[in-house]
Length: 305
Image (cartoon, rainbow, N blue to C red; front, side, top):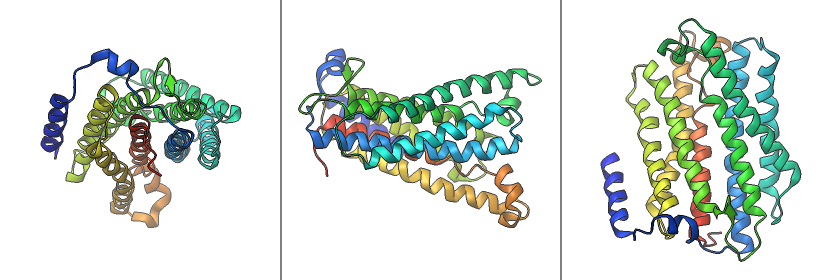
């Protein structure tokens, strides 16, 4: 699977013209009103999926920590705001950025960055500091970044939505599709790192545990290539992103099965849901894959309905 994806990626790289930074800066299709709004709603959907994952995961993990620090309630509140903003954005067909959604996404992004700092601080306080033992069993470094990604994707959605019809949506002076694609690729790689760490802790006892550390890196490479390459249709990239989104859903099923295999199974759900494989973690891949699909819509510049 990896060999096939790598071969196709290298082949497309040879076929594409080498245009360097000029391609990154200038080549992007103009979007009509409907195309931009649909892409923005896709990013709202991605932000919402990430918010759902963070909301459920932080609720379980911080409940396990007895909410000893009042700051542990912050991700529940900020993820809820991001989820509400995303639902509103998905239903909004106007081509105007919404101030309340912007505020909610900014709070989510800030909470994610602050949470990452808190988790680093808590790891540093543990005996041994940043050692493998603490990385395995301490506060997860990557978890708060999913909140930051939810805020980022929502922020990008509002910028795309607010672009004038018939223009190239831009973020930080760059075509929006390329920025979203680059952010998606980076987010996928970070999520792979978190999944790889926890599955390594589980000794990859089930061969399916290799999927989250093999499929998403290919998706990251493909969407990264789209961010830097010439605008064109990328059916294989779209297909692989759809498979990655499906992986996030299937992963919930695998984790539910892992909970069932623990002593008492789901009859002892109060303990096993807290101590078993995290059910809310895999949908992060789904959220980022949805962001990648929205990036492709921006890069292709076609109304796909």
